[in-house]
Length: 164
Image: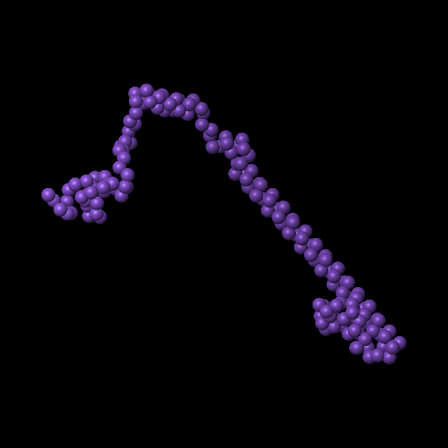
């Protein structure tokens, strides 16, 4: 008898250099499951074949009976023509521009109001510091710094002092 790995047999050529061995088709496929292939053709009963053929013919007939919409008709019907699209884009851009201008005007208005309020607050601080100098006998600069610090708090005190 044969003792060992001489070739042949069911498991004989299962290595990487083997040919059509275990789990491999003769075409060199890496699949480990052997299954027959149809080769792209239908393999069933005559009744199945007739049904498939009838469905293909019905689909072709249905596609031929429906009129294909023309691209320009679709664009006109759905209001997505080039002119309509350009108009919509222009309108959207105009709306965005109007919103930006409104926001800019609002910020400018708020900034100008804040500036006016700060100027008025500084003038009030200067008037009160003058009164403190006259009534309390303190230096004007010291009274002004104290009034500004009380009025503007710690966040804006140095800016207000430098402007005063």
